[in-house]
Length: 61
Image (cartoon, rainbow, N blue to C red):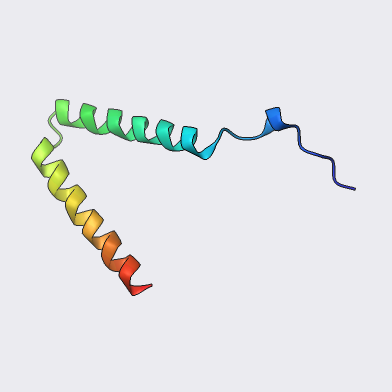
């Protein structure tokens, strides 16, 4: 027989996980820009390219 889950053992809400992931990515990108791996313009150009690719794939599904 299944044992009921304790609410305190459950993973954080999706919103908290999404926010933590967003902060992690933001910090990594800002550090790479500061270190000169790429410029902010290069980052946003690539981001727009990736967004367009994702949107293209979504429209085919």
